[in-house]
Every structure is written in C-alpha cells, then in structure tokens.
Length: 292
Ligand SMILES: Nc1ncnc2c1ncn2[C@@H]1O[C@H](COP(=O)(O)OP(=O)(O)OP(=O)(O)O)[C@@H](O)[C@H]1O
Ligand SMILES: [Mg+2]
Image 1 (spheres, rainbow, N blue to C red):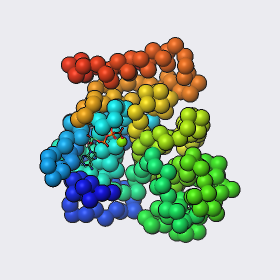
Image 2 (cartoon, protein in one colour):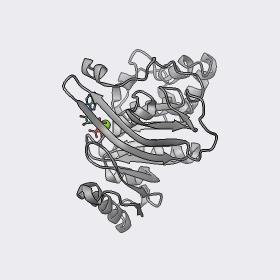
Image 3 (cartoon, protein in one colour):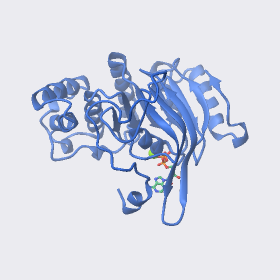
C-alpha cells in the first residue's frame, strides 16, 4: 500500500478490532431479508489535490448462497465496493449491512481473495497459510485448524502440497490455496476481486469450474468482481452492472440460467451482447432492469 493510499482512504474511526464471530455493530432491526445489504453507498478517496468519488449511491442485496457478481469497466469502483463490504473503507454516504447489522470494520465473517498471486506469506507452508486466519482470529485451536486446513486443501486438490512453500506452486495453485484459506474460515460472505484475471485462459476456465463445484458442495455466499462479461455470466446467478467512473448501478441481471456448459450457445452470446450494450450505452438509458 502506498503512502498516498494510506492518506486517501477514509478509515473507520476508532480503528476496528475484529471480533471472532459476527458483525461488529448491534442489529438495528431484526426485520431484514437479505444477508448482505448495500444501501446508497457512495465511496470517495481524498487525495492531497482533490476528492475522487469512486462509487455513487450504489444499492444491491445479496442473499444467502447467491453468486453475486459486480461487473463494470476498469475504474468504476468494483474493488472499492468490495473493500467497503470488507470493512476497510468507510462510506461517505449509505451503509453496508450484514445480517441486518451495520458493517463498521473488517471481520472474519467477510474474507477476501485477491487477484495477486502474492497474497500468501511466502515464509509459511501451504498448510500454515490456510491455518493462519483460523488461529489468529481464535476461531480454532492449532490442532483443529490443522485438520480443517487439510480438509479444505483436499477439496481444492492440494492436500499433497500441504508442506511446501508458496514459491513452489504455480499461479493457479496459489489461488487455490487462497480460496481454501478463505473457505476454511466459513465466512458469511466470500469476497473475490478478479481472482482469476492473472491466469491463462485454460487455467482460468478450470478455476471457474472448480469454484462452481465447490459452491455446489458448500453453498457459500459469494460476492465476485470481474470485468469479463463471459466470466460474470458463468460464475454469477445475479449480476450488477456498474457504469463507468464513478460507478452507479446501471442494471441488475438474472443469470442463473448460464454456466460453463452454456458458454458459446446462442442464448449465452445474446445475453453477453445485451450486457455489452447496457455497459456501453449512453448514461441516459442507464436504469434498465433486465431479466435473462
Ligand atoms: N488509493 C486511491 N487513491 C485515489 N483514488 C483511487 C484510489 N484507489 C482507487 N482510486 C480511484 O477510484 C476509482 C475506482 O477504483 P477501483 O480500483 O475501485 O476500480 P475498479 O473498478 O476496481 O477498476 P479495475 O477493474 O481496473 O480493477 C478509480 O477512478 C480510481 O482511480
Ligand atoms: Mg479493481
């Protein structure tokens, strides 16, 4: 993180101390439907020269076991939105709620998988990497954490590599470790920021397949960022389209009919084209509600 980033991001004050379980503020009301509610969220970075508005009044609901995708062009604020849901950035306007409670900072109920392959501390073995958040958050003791780490490494096909260090793994394998580490925490929401963008096309497809297979087994709730229309259709059951900078909600698309098997079909191509048109059409027709 650069000094500029540190200076610019509005942080929650006072600094948040993550609690081992559950979100960090008391529930305002027990009357809520969605697991994750993003309500009128405006996010800004204040640089020395000016204030940059990254998103403008973005709202969406993510339900339990949704695979919800944020799709939009570079710079539209997708990563910033994910950071706000993660509790790393405080909104200037609006609110993020998890289980009906306002998010006030990071917590083990929201775990992020990033694009970069270097998100694993290189001095820890693969198993130690997966164990680390479980132990550090006091979710489990070392013995139980080791067992759970091995279980999840097995589920991503890496049990044999438990005792090697990350530099001995390919990029795809490192991302599998990051996914195992995140899922081992059993977060309320798994946050993924373009996790497969740096992989070659074949590995990317394989990782999409594996993620969907893991979801079939574990039915976790996923908030997934991409700027690939095809990836959004394959991975998501619902897609939020964001306008170019600053990001506004442009449309929400129901994409549960599409998966890896439908890629290349006429329907899939038509949906991809429709999304493309919505993303790049002029601002004025921005509030379409689309059902595929
Ligand atoms: N640390 C920062 N300081 C100032 N401005 C920032 C900072 N980080 C992001 N921004 C600005 O906020 C806006 C949204 O950035 P963000 O990284 O969220 O976009 P994105 O949709 O994730 O883009 P990409 O697809 O390229 O990853 C951009 O205009 C960017 O220039
Ligand atoms: Mg980004």
